[in-house]
Image (cartoon, rainbow, N blue to C red):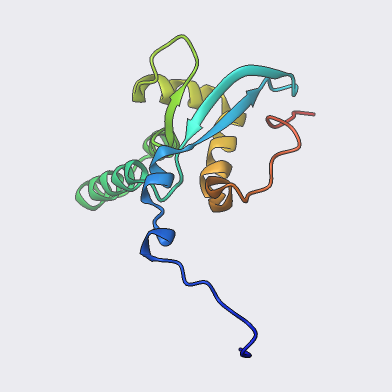
Length: 138
């Protein structure tokens, strides 16, 4: 670095991510044909406390009980994705049971939640915005 260049040294709080990852980001939902709706989910990052707790719970169960059945693996996948949903604006309560039932049937939405949860930049306002509010099915 030359004498004319300066750097900014952020303080410790600039590196804090836990609150942002736990609070989540708003994800607008479209119908499977791409039609926008007024529905949305608030989605946590995969590094959130809720996701890590659910993952630990599943790992502990597998360590104690052995290899899960195919049905249990699918239930675990849905449980992990469901743990990423903080809230929604549907009329039904945003409970773990309701979220899991919704995502098990709404596969496109489950995939969207999974993608958003992995997009760290989206949680800090630097991620690219999707060109549509959801996936389109051909």
